[in-house]
Image 1 (cartoon, rainbow, N blue to C red):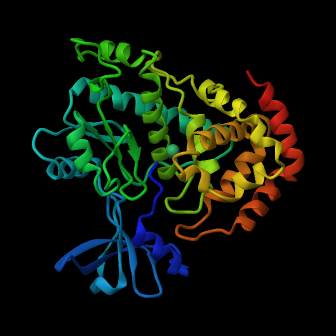
Image 2 (cartoon, rainbow, N blue to C red):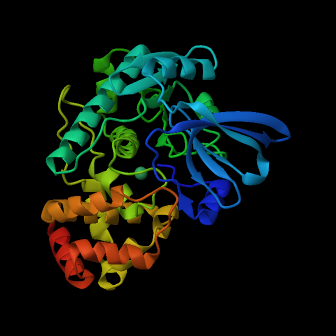
Length: 386
Ligand SMILES: [Zn+2]
């Protein structure tokens, strides 16, 4: 998940003091503003307004735009209600946005826009629909009421790196580097490229054709972490669209990321179900257990709960993700009702309001009790997990 707000958005979030309460009928707002000397216009619903007049506007497919107050020329409320785009209209828009050669594959929840093979697009959307069903069933079963996504879920699948990089520029201005796919909080889309085109997966001369061949290629050990990344990113998209989490709300990263890792075990063997949920994630468990000596300090748990820095630091992120997986795994397994209650509290958090480390710790303690005892039991269980 790309969680960097970007300079402008982060600054806006800091200055904003009020979030608009949801209105009975949301009206469309039209904002004219200057960008790079040109006059532009956007329409959407207002997510937030900063004290200096800057706004975050959300369009009919869920993209969020940040417009600085000093750039706004005019604003007016239009006499029409905000209506999310239909899948059909989104399909047309995505194709029009891309260079030639892109096509669409639609499923009940997804609009997949691709310029790779139709088989790969079908393979991807089938994986995502199965994940969607498994994920939403899982939380309903745990006592969390989810809703259908407000917007059709857009997924872009690129045949090659060059177009993938170009289409990801707004989110990753420095290039995609080693990132094979990501969910963008800003655009609400998942961007990825066709994994069967990567050298790690594609043997010399091997074809990428039928669903069976795709499954075969992506079941190789080298492909498993790549598919896990796609599943991980798709999990974020579902969580932020079904009411489990709110985009740009202050959801602690140990929770948001650890939960995505909890779901990331791919299940390519089955065509209908999804058997990966809740299994021990062995690569993450191994990393966690190798780092057990970090946990000798009693402040380790409090540090992870209060502060997201480790997740944003490329040198420490792998260890942080493993710790986060272990904590989510432990809480879901041993304290499922408290975990669900904690999730409900987080789900109610408004966007663009940052909690202090103190608040985070208090909210955690209010649900799970004193940290010392919890850390002791957590380490006992997870150092023996296998
Ligand atoms: Zn993530």
